[in-house]
Length: 207
Image 1 (tube, rainbow, N blue to C red):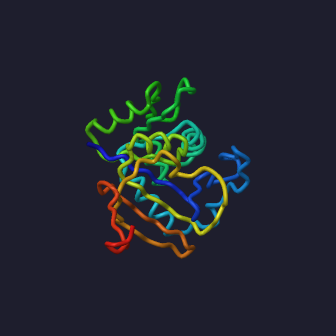
Image 2 (image 1 turned 90 degrees about the vertical axis):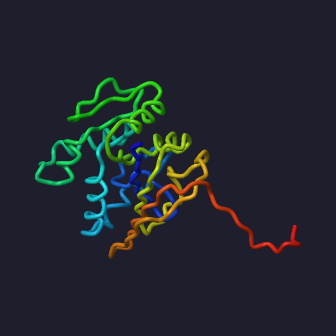
Image 3 (image 1 turned 180 degrees about the vertical axis):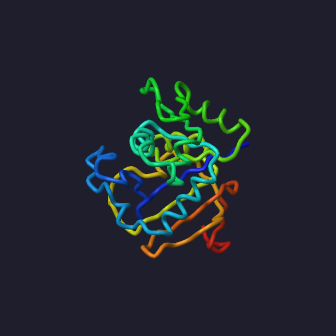
């Protein structure tokens, strides 16, 4: 079965909302949009590009798809990220869009959980979920994400949309890769490792 991999930009307190600019997602009164760009350096570019190049297909919710579809088709395919995103199969989960025009895009409507489950059963390599905070919540509640690429930035935002919210299915994880950039960004890859392990520091005679 194919693995579903999420690549998520997070603040240190777990916020994933509107990293690229103030207008990306100001919903809920979020006023800290654009917290990512000041931390971009060569390491960031190399690691994020590598994650994308490994993917055999990419998956989006509506909002993230529209943001990226308004940018990357205008970038020359001489850029390796543009070449990848403009050519790779793209799947968009939405019950409000009636068409998707970015090259090699397919609209997933109706029961998107069933649609993603079907995608995972098809032949092929990893499927990369990009951004898509609301959609990620649905996938987490149905235990469909296998690998977490978490890019953690040295900022505290205080409020906003979180990747791991109520409804996340408990799971054990194994750290398989980690790296830190000169700007203090941490790149951590976690893969599923069965159930949550438990133990206790209590003595035998303690209640």
